[in-house]
Length: 169
Image (cartoon, rainbow, N blue to C red):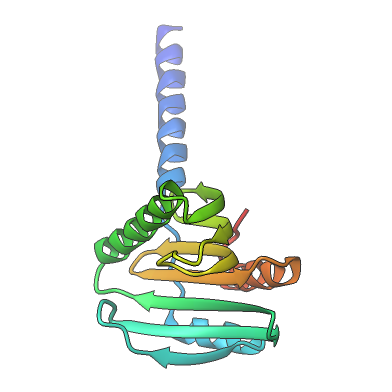
């Protein structure tokens, strides 16, 4: 009986360790080729950009009219640590804007992404106006996404991220 209890306890501890490991797992990055193919099929215009901090930078833009739109920036860094540092710095910048009353809205953070939905003041160093922002870190890559706050643009952004393999709540 004692052996059975120990064996059961060991199995339960192992199951808990596996579930905790799964929660902490990072997201798989999308390759540049996948980024261009998936978003190109979704009617985004995709082009390469220069960036001093990243190995590669691509931007995908989608707009139905001048008052709405979605932009998704793809940054590929040399290491996972560089991508995570940029992710954390971006989140810290957003929180600083909130503390300085340059952002009024909701911020939510998970281990591999954060969102911000609200209004950025004209003096903001990030962006101006009402925006929905999503930042995703996955291995050596970082996606920084902006959409106007209307439902249609948010839906387009969330669909694009889902197509790339990232489900955002």
